[in-house]
Image (cartoon, rainbow, N blue to C red):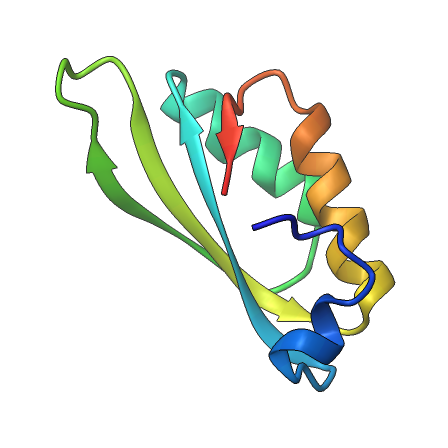
Length: 90
């Protein structure tokens, strides 16, 4: 699903603020944790381990937080996308 789609709020019936989840895949757990702390600052969020890849090289995590607008949601996505410790965002 393309989370940057401008029509997403209408298609899913999103009303802001709302809870949002990003699934993050990384091969650098400790660096990911530090990146998220730096990116989100004092915002409340949960970063929960989801699973390990079959060969054990990658870990996936669920990042959940409250987004306050479509712009806020997209801004977080774009910041996550630029982070070198995150291989894939779903």
